[in-house]
Image: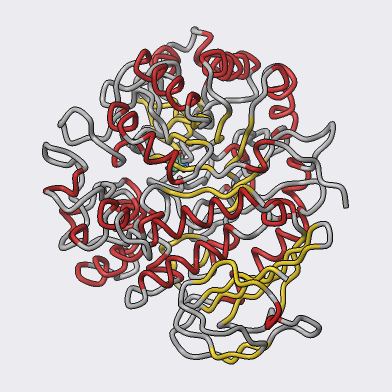
Length: 553
Ligand code: NOJ
């Protein structure tokens, strides 16, 4: 099968959640000075692009995902000029810049929303302002972040729609003027030199006409009326045609509840393609149901099925986005790996997903094996989602210590602790007081210590990324899974232009008997990556805890 080669398929992307990356001015908040100081580190890691979670002015009801001005940089992070410098310096190092485009909603402090409160203003129709019905809210939709999806404004005697927090107001994308605004925002950043966008909950931008009641659900009643809504393809096509086609740029859309079949309608290459890649959530549900807050025991089989289905369905004319962490989930080691076998499991997880076909994304701190943190009381939490779940859980009788225990595992705040740069005070993240406490394990887990250790997770990531870059089979090879029924081993093969590669990953600390797939002779194969010393190659062996091996055949 002929696969079209493109730069975005060959890159590895590093996600920066700016608040917690690196603080350059000592105010306790990560910023662009901090980013500048770490560009050489990122270059050395071997990444090719940075995706910045929102850097824009924001009241931070959802830490930047509530935007008050789309064409500026928050004072917390620096200035537009400083951002230009970051883009230039990154480009000099061959690193591209991807911005977070959050246009399903704006902050309630955005001037469009403030103006929209005048019923006669053209901005009124930028949002979903609706009258109540029979003394009730316009429909039964529930926000996924904060209570009902409607908030009442007594002065207008109307409600506005918010799928997320109250301070994140849904934009009415059916209004052509709103779409023009979105296109102008895109042009603004592309003209400034950025290389593309990660598009936040982009499959939510088209709501069903008439906003009908939804089927009552444990989370997000109404979501069937705005997930992959009636005009989403049309609007994305318009953005592509009017803007993206005119630049050499890239897009990855965040798509909750996405299936491979539906994804193909967005990302299959050709005239109807509206996005390059999509972030789906299926493999992230291998230890939970719909949300990280409804926990279930981790099932490797579920994870493998999700990955393998996407690998198979996309191969040839669509492309996968590969990730196991981002700012919305607890750390991967604590979900799919092991604290006891910290180093081994971190390396195994890295191999497991980065050696698949697709563009890999690495979340800040993942490359050193950062873990979940410690929450001692409710006072330690800061996220609107945690507080909402506290209320939801209280209704179900899950309170106090039980809630604290659940939240400590489930909250996305686990991934938002400052990056651990060294073992000095505050992990070298800031000289001030960090806005969020540093994970207490920074004395053991930090960049400086790992730089010096040839066997570290960090140095393994560097090796792995170099390996991907130097071997087209890792980027463009086909994918075939073995032993899909195993709940302990994940084994797959890649094949490209006559070359074959076998990836073996153990997800357990127990020894598991591994047998080479029929017709494969591993004793003659070259072991190219591993997380234990392997004395000799054989076709049958007992795996070590969280072992991984990559063979070139
Ligand atoms: C998805 C983002 O990744 C998440 O952090 C945010 O809270 C919601 N979208 C709302 O913008």
